[in-house]
Length: 339
Image (cartoon, rainbow, N blue to C red):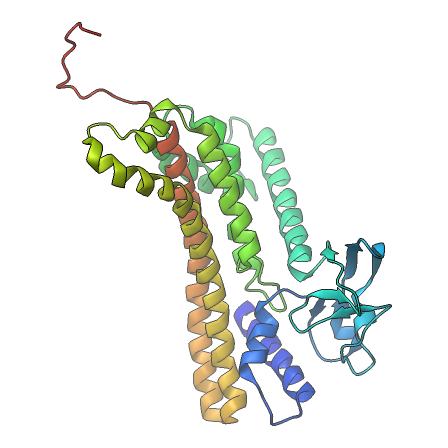
């Protein structure tokens, strides 16, 4: 049902874009980018009341701090206009007319609003899970606790503990939060009119940076020695291996960032492209075929939402585990007593 409603809302949104662009002059690339990228307003359907105008918070050395509604950037026909010297361009960047002053944009954009919604949903759910755990201590879980407790236990025993080993408890809160933040963000992004939160490169970059910092701050002597003085490798080879190891410190979080960003954004683009075919060909046959394929892809996207959350958490745990594992001497090593 949710998937059908998603398709209906997407079609309504595309009809709006098409009408705004002059009827038959439908531009699928602009439509797709309109739904995927971040914005200072949250558009649901055609008309003034179908748009949620978000607060704009900007600072510049010329004007200081300014706070106003993003509705000021649009006229009655929803065409972009300047407001008090501020201009919102087609890439959603704000600048001052006739000024080279840098604008620091702290606005509550569509993705930021979605971030708050995601956080609120997580808090409501896991406070309820915590209350259920206290209430049913020593008993079988019930209610919402029975849904999430098996997932938490699975992540702890099958993902986090095996990859990190001794001392995994210290990283458990971060990794569980990471998993559910990505999972809820992915699932909420599939709802009608939702923002593309986890398909935003800034969000995936931030998550990857957190993993990067925790991994390298937790790194022990063995971890850093393996990077800068790889044991058991001849000196000439170390000239090649050490730079590769240093580069690997940064490529690991970059791979986390790119993987999540590409997987989620690509799914949205494929779905929107297939729905856009209905407006390009204007055919009932294409509409039926496109709808069936989109329903199937939405099912796959539900699976991808969970897989991407799992993969990001698993690799984060793996990287932390590699940085914190203790060095174990090979059982064939012999203590010569010369140390």
